[in-house]
Length: 134
Image (cartoon, helix red, strand yellow):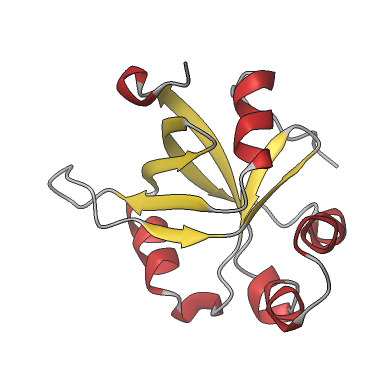
């Protein structure tokens, strides 16, 4: 199994992971950003992952899959990123979602087969200095 990589600094990754909500916005074809959507996220083996609770029908998910790039923001960190399909860590990601968000119905949905099929690794391309943590 390939080791995921991340160029988020350890401090940025910890700040993002410590936040319960990740704001995700996909780029449009003209380079502008779509409105941000709040999603749940986890960190596994030093990489940031997101899933669509609605599977392929999630509007934000369809937008980031089409664009491939966008922005994420959480914990005072904002970065321009690419979204890469990654199904190699599904069990560890399920465990991370349960550890972070509990065992309720929303967690059962984000760890379902429908959601697992949408797992994306979030790889930073650049850090937005204007939104950098203090």
